[in-house]
Length: 319
Image (cartoon, rainbow, N blue to C red; front, side):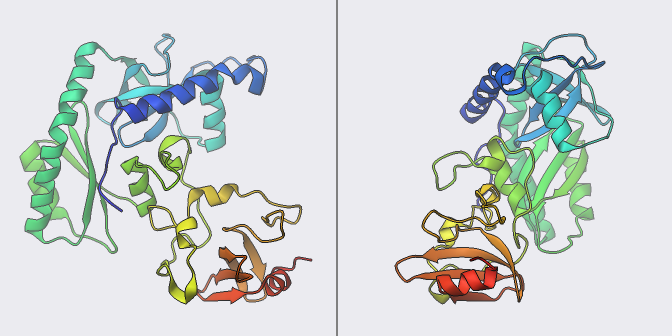
């Protein structure tokens, strides 16, 4: 996975996401009917840097519009964000998230001066990131710096990184705190979250689903298991299932299933990403080759096997 390409709030990709959100709000009446629910405190979904979206209460009494910059309550300070959804759409998303925690508040609409301040901070971030890289190399830490996020009030600097094991970064934190005169937060993220922050394009040519519209990153079959190299055992279909995060693609969760819970094509072949319980444990279909009349299956223990369609049907309990 490469470093972050674009995680801004004011770029072209963000404008596309906001346009899609506006279209959804325009069609809310057709989707959900008349809005009869009245909230004591309105809820807004706000997008922040790195494609992070959180829910905030709106006690100001002001009706914010989609795409409007706002100032948000943060721990011991304030931050900058863009309103992403409001009204019944925001309430629906919050109910799907299932969070019962008390929501932080939107403080006010952002002024032009505060928008300019946010833009200036974004211009400084490459320099800050380069300084973090040098500090990591100086301390010889086995970690990969993914992204940094300096809060609007410049009182907190979040450093996002990936690592395969625990890292002792106490010396690094002291150096960074001395350099930037801010509270340092080290945030270890997964490769899926790294892909979300990258806001890159997938093989389909579209912005990654996790960066554009998905509320949360779903767990995929054996997502945290080490992936086998492409081409092992004659499999040439790995590119169909593995995303930029080197994990099964999130879109595999939306494969259409039949009445027995299995995904299948009209011609009887299973769809890539189909999961089933066999005699040897849980398994997932990683590739299908109709020309060779074979199905590639990977079991939970990492074993990979090539089966005929008849063998697959027997193993998966399909008729």
